[in-house]
Length: 253
Image 1 (cartoon, one colour):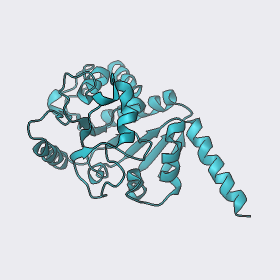
Image 2 (cartoon, rainbow, N blue to C red):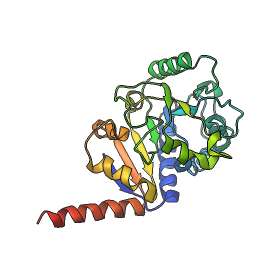
Image 3 (tube, rainbow, N blue to C red):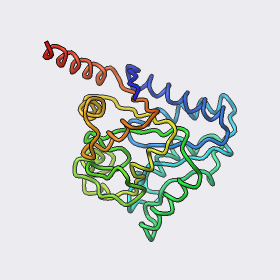
């Protein structure tokens, strides 16, 4: 794993948008693994702007999103379908046939999850997979205790995740209790993974990811065994990690 401090969310978002642009330009048939949430909100508008000024052809670019809330249809304002279209897919000339987002309102959810996993496997490895990380170390909606060999499936959200996501809903009771999520094994297929984390609330999860053991109690720790992972952080997390290192060094004398 490679740790990179890009000072703040704005600079980090610029970096990731440029990396995605470079991939799309160099590989016109690339597959992108995309994530949602507050961490990603500046990346997609920046990418859209770069695609516009460079007149990039997107017709054969394929995208897979990590997850979607169960019970929300594509028109719901808090669905990840809406999120992605507002920030990215409604701009430029994305080919909707190559845009894959799980259907949270599918009539047969288990079949939807299995079909999504099959599409992932048939199209092949994402060239870049974007990830955020939850305060409890989840990636996608793979909560603590998720088996490392998990694939796309229906998951129950923990109370901490529901509470964290409640800022986007009128009340905490409106937050869906389940989601369709790529599994950890699904995520690990990617050729390159870029995980972003900012702010004090993510300090502990990143510290455990960097310094802790590989354990299913911290789902993100599976990334320790991936050959090409970048962890992008801000000053807040980087300084926290440095302070931990200094304390360990002092205690070793």
